[in-house]
Amino acid sequence: MSCFTCIKVLMILFNLAIFLAGGTLLGVGIWVSVDSGSFLKIFGALPDNVAAQFVNVGYFLIAIGALLVILGFLGCCGAQKESKCLLITFFSIVLIIFIAEVAGAVVALVYSSVAESFLTSVLTPVLKNDYGQNPEVTKIWNNTMTEFKCCGLSNYTDFDNSAFLSKNNGIYPSQCCKNSSSCNNNNAATSAVPGCFNQILNMLKSNAAIVGGVAAGICALELAAMVVSMYLYCRIDKEGSIH
Image 1 (cartoon, rainbow, N blue to C red):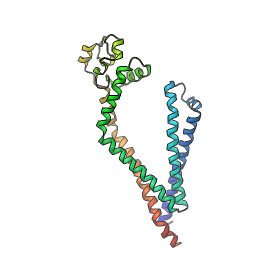
Image 2 (tube, rainbow, N blue to C red):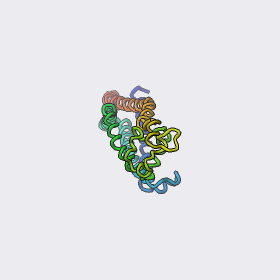
Image 3 (cartoon, rainbow, N blue to C red):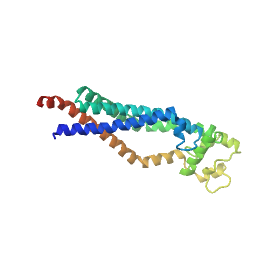
Image 4 (cartoon, rainbow, N blue to C red):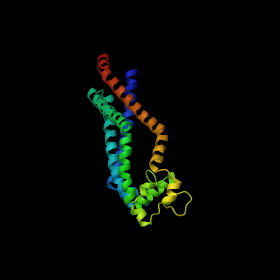
C-alpha cells in the first residue's frame, strides 16, 4: 500500500468518526429541542429554570453537530472521491475554526483584566439587589460561599447597602464570619473572609494546565487534518497521472 493510499484511508476513517459524532450530537440536540420533557425524565425532577436551559443546550448541540456532519462529509467524500474541491473546502473550514480559536485565546489573554472588571460590575449589583430576595440566586451564592469558604465577590463589603442587610437588620451572611453567632459589621471585618472571585479564579488557574492541554490537543488534531487534506489535495493530480 502506497503512502498516498494509506493517508487517504486514514483520512476517510478519521472523518467518518467526525461524521458519526456530529450525527449523534445533532440527533440529541433535536431530541432535546423538540421533546425536552421526555429527555428531562432521564435526570429526574429539576428546577424549572434549569429545565428551560436545556432548550438552549439543544440548539447549541444542533449547531455543533451540523458543523461536524458537514466537516466529516467533506473530508470523507473528498478523500474517497479524490475531489480537490471538497478537500480544499474542508481545509478552509478547519482553517477558519483554527484561526477563530487562536484569536479567541489571544483576546482572552489580552482582555482578561477587562473581563474581570466587567464580571465584577455585573455580579456586585446581583448581590446587593437579589441575594436574600431571589431564592435561586440566594441558593447559588450560599453554595458557592460555603464551598469556597468565601464571602461576597470581593469581600463582605459587597453586601453593604444591600437588600439582604436591610432585611436582616445589618447582619451579614454567616459565611462572612468565622465562628460567630452574630455576623455584624465588626465581626465580618475581623474575620476578613476572602471574596469568592479570587477563590474561583485561583481554582480556574490551578486547572489551566488541563484546559491548556485539551486545547493544545484539539489544535494539534486540526493542524494534522489540514496537513493531511492539503497533502491529498496536492498529490491527487500526481497520483492520477501515475494511474
